[in-house]
Length: 86
Image 1 (tube, rainbow, N blue to C red):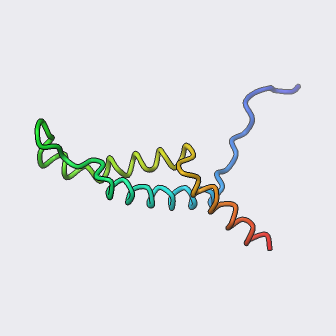
Image 2 (tube, rainbow, N blue to C red):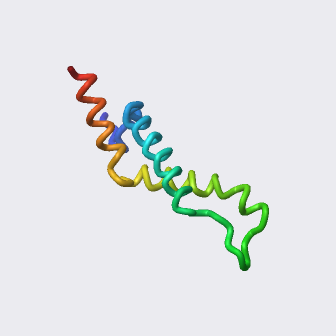
């Protein structure tokens, strides 16, 4: 008797995960330099907004990196994979 169901989950590639994490860190710094998450003068969130702005930038950067970002993670992944295969 054969059971049809969803395929077994694949293990995440640690090299790809590291490349995405590096791109996310880079994007976090770029968003910070661009002023993303800084409080506005009028109707701003005050001290709470300022304290949590870094978390917001990090989450945006992580989402960007996981969805393709600027392509840095993919380039790093292939370069590192090629080095490992040599």
